[in-house]
Amino acid sequence: MKKKMSEISWDDFQRLPFVEKAPYLLQDDGAPYHTLFAQQFDYAVLERLTVLTNCIRKISKSRAGADFLRSLIADKRAMIYFSQPSSRTFLSFLSACQILGIQTGEVRDTSTSSEFKGESHEDSVRTFSSYFDLIIMRSPEKSLAEKMSHALSVSNRPVPIINAGSGKDQHPTQALLDIYTLLRSFEKKGGLKNRTIVFCGDLLRGRTVRSLSYLLTNYTNITQIFVAPPQLQVGQDVLDILSDHDVTYELTDDLKSVLAQSDAVYMTRIQDEWDASEGESAGIDTSNFKFGAAELALLPADGIIMHPLPRRDEISIEVDNDPRAMFWRQMRNGMWIRSALIAMTFGFEREILTYQG
Ligand code: NCD
Image (cartoon, rainbow, N blue to C red; front, side, top):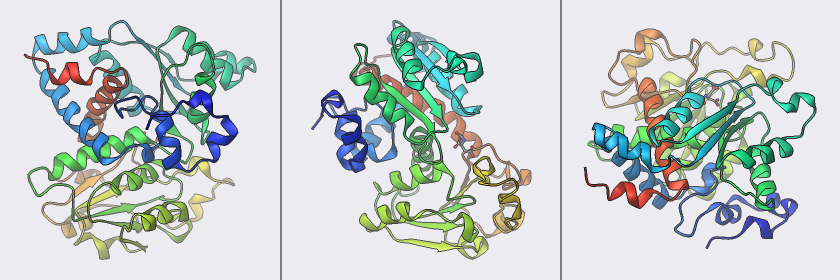
């Protein structure tokens, strides 16, 4: 049941467990209004998003279809407000808005906004909501998108917020595109069930891993294996959620030993921007957490390799042209599923699904 964010204080809201926060983020039909964390997506909504994404892809192939999509939300404007670096997420949200005819404004560097003069995030976001109908935001702060959606709910111009990455914590739309990539990869091979997904790299500070690990709990019999140096192994909070959902998981530091049983290997880079001291990560031996020709040889013929990107040297370029490499496709999938999410946020799901080309 949908609940109103304006009827709960921020202090009370932030203390709620995710399952109790989720109803505050929904529209009447269960579609997301705000997209803030992975735990707000259940199987039914993931299914709706997947169907809608496929439909948008299909419609966009013809000129008439692309024109229809571009006319859909042409009366709305979106602010893309990124106070952390980004290439793909920024561009795919921008492209998603363009597909739907939404005009965009952007802040990619707060040194060019009034935050540089000391304006608070609250005041910035409130300013954006005066001009825009949607705020897509990335921030180094953990719960900023949540806090801003609450602040707007009690303002006179509430607008939806999409979290495009918050601190080390969450990256829900990356997880959506990752799920969509997994679903498409296994579509004709028995689907996303009874699978083993391996996460490798900096699992402690990688927000994409946290969000994807949560989303995978919506699918039947998915085993999750976390491969990392002990200092960068996945957090206990993630493991607690997996236990709550009766998900089988394993922790190891030996990538090669788990490859033969992997359906997907999700590589990540070392997130050294979060180092507590200069050179902290550089002191960790990460040489065994890389994917190259030797690892490729151990991966099953139907297994896939994923990466949220950007990569450094954790996947060698000789892997790029292998048919099992999905990381370039992930990017494009991101543009499509973000279009679907935005269309759903503005209530255009039915109109798209019933389009007669
Ligand atoms: C990721 C992020 O920002 O968390 N990038 C992305 O959005 N595709 C992963 C990363 O930076 O390592």
